[in-house]
Length: 303
Image 1 (cartoon, rainbow, N blue to C red):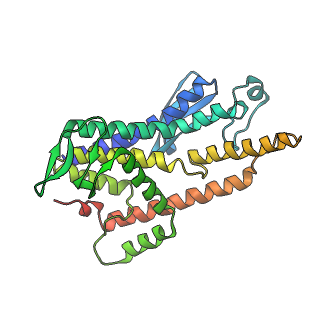
Image 2: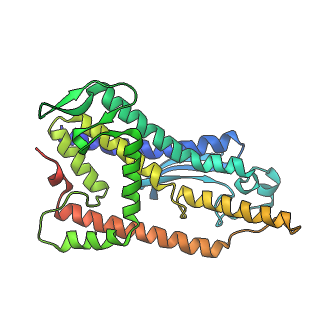
Image 3: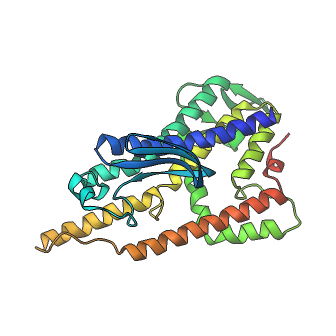
């Protein structure tokens, strides 16, 4: 059961990424934008195929994915034919670009909710009754009790993910992570975990036959992906939203002042911010993976 649970988690991770990218891809196509790549993973391409103008493929590192929409990246080399086509991302109205960017976030949040509804629909909620943990059948709006030390609904679970993401970008995250790695003490609850750690936890739940907890873990994965992408930093979806909002606001003011409404964010500065965010994620990924190897996250799962 443990191996099956881990394989299920890996498959769920890839599907979650695919659904996120599908949100971007479908909305871009609906608005007539040109999408030339739909990739799951990063790094070297393991497999790909061309369908029309789009290359679909799988890459070697399954830690994300991307859809290449022509004109969305400042690094795109655009030909005269690209500009004449009128299909570039940057040529579209702001509201269309916002929908395309936010579609990935929305799909993850919706999938997280559906997985929670499935978990509670199949197994019921966990509550305390006469001092014992029991399961209780619930409806479409699930509430979790004993497993999270108090009542937890979908909304409050999203709030927990917001708190987790906020902690991830706080100075305490690095110091706590280093302390957990270097300390000889057992791992503490609330420590950051990598994808390896999540697989360890899912495997531990699977070995207990706790399919409810496995589904909740996958739901939480989607919720944290959705919440994290709201952050207004490149290269996250929220970074693209920030560009649209900032440029739109500045150009609206310029238009009121009778100036040309063609102001754009300095792409070099934005690229440096994106690089800093990527390096921070890599640092956290390395640190949490080391912690998960030295002190497996499965140790946090009760018997």
